Length: 231
Image (cartoon, rainbow, N blue to C red):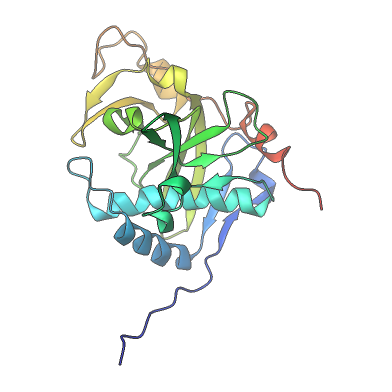
């Protein structure tokens, strides 16, 4: 007898609607999604970067799934490179020139030029997790116009937030430093921390400058929501 397949329950992902126009839109994390991202991380473990453990890998998928849920909730058409397409290159990558493909997270067609290809970067829960980071090696092998930062605030209280975004052209000018998970472009999640540290010595290349994340109510959510299907 073949082994019985364990079925996943319906996955619920919610953005709290009364917060979507706030600087920090809030997500409610349902228990089912934790089980789902554990499954996704088994399909495509995030182990390509040194010292990435399973929990951090799952949090990366969690951020992407929360953002995917927001797009679905507001009927925003998109192409999402879900881990279930692990062996389907055409569903997870764009051909940038003959024989060369680059991976993406989301493509949102109605967004203006320079904002269509969206990468989601997730900061795990923890008061000491204060940085937006984009691994340099991974970043160079992906295609993106902007990156959206999701912070897992508290899994027990089921809270997460979109804490900001940056254009790709600004991310590659950020300081680069290895905080133990490979070299990464980085800045603080909190814009006030950027201002407090301006002019001080910071980890990374001396010529680069920290930039604050742009808040979600600075173009991002307005432009995303404008493409939601009305019917």
